[in-house]
Image (cartoon, rainbow, N blue to C red; front, top):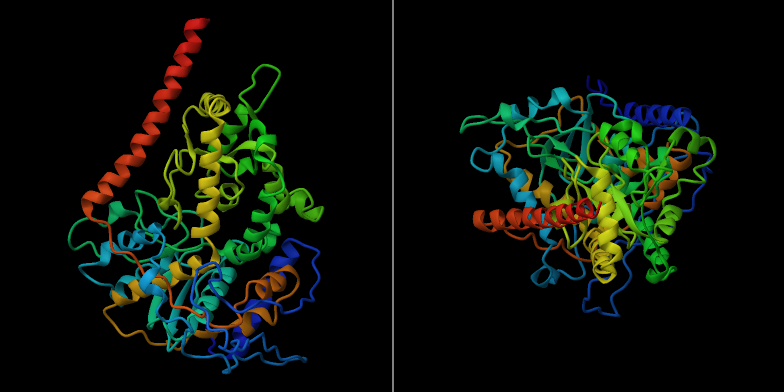
Length: 500
């Protein structure tokens, strides 16, 4: 069911209702007041020639209208075109390699293009339809998402429009905010299959979902996880506080095991009186954490805890897990339980370079061997942990998150075979309509992640698609690395059996 009113008041009421509903469901005990301090958006870590005489770009903070029964509108003062101070930058800055997967995700529509009928066939599993016309965003709401996923996904898209105002072409898309992919490839085979395009947070080998950054990059209020831009810097500083040589040689995991059978299976690997699998596993109870103000689940502190261990375990939940980027950023070597799903950036990582692969059908013995091997090869453990941290710190900073969003939407728009138009039921969205009626942690995170000025630079240059042979070689190299680890593991346990 879509929003039935085109009035501005209707969308304010909808977001106000969603916020009140979320607050009632989970009281985060955060102050409703917040100073607007977000700085101008710029890729500061990228070397550029700076003209010191260039005046500072004006900033555009929230313009909230106060009062009872006042309708919040969308100010027209924000620039509607992108005029970067460094327009030549893309000539020498190519996007990270995982951007090449954009071409693969859109390949099902490369020959046919995308028709409006294809998009309409995807709405049965969608949470909302997004329209971008003349640089402005409009939505039709179909169904409520889990918690505030839809809200912070839309918030992220609105910030993209502020990073690169007027640069995206007109487009129309469907978005699904659930855990699992929604477009099974087996239903759409052959030259005339015409699969419906649907954006989503993850994919797998059996799906055709177009992968997009998840909501947590702009904050996850229900679990008190801060926006990625500020949290990434905190993690980076935390990594410097503990000497790598002082870390404890065991594997650590903390999470909610009830969301997936594979996690319940992982708990069998916990240290006990009978077995020591070199792991320390802890159960995360989010309801209890919320009652105690998330004192024991703060990601900043968890990353500090992981700085005292050499190994940290990543394992999927119901689908991919948001925890992935936080685990990889913490400098410990990630023990990566064989995943089924991928998000937008993980296809840029490789076994033995960014993580150590763990079998999903024999977790305990695989984890035991990984720690034993690592304790005898600490120089390699350190190199893998640092490579993962560098990948996350450099290739997954918010600059590139926005660039990925821009390129996947831009390439998608090129495939449209029709001119997007604003339907009667669509409602315009802007930062003011979302953030001004918000309260508590929801408002705090929106303000913290808000872009206040257009980027000084153009997006990075999208690399070309993979050559079929190069893609095959890449996938084979990854598979060979995993097989090598499994061979070492088999040899280790065979030698143990011979001694007994």
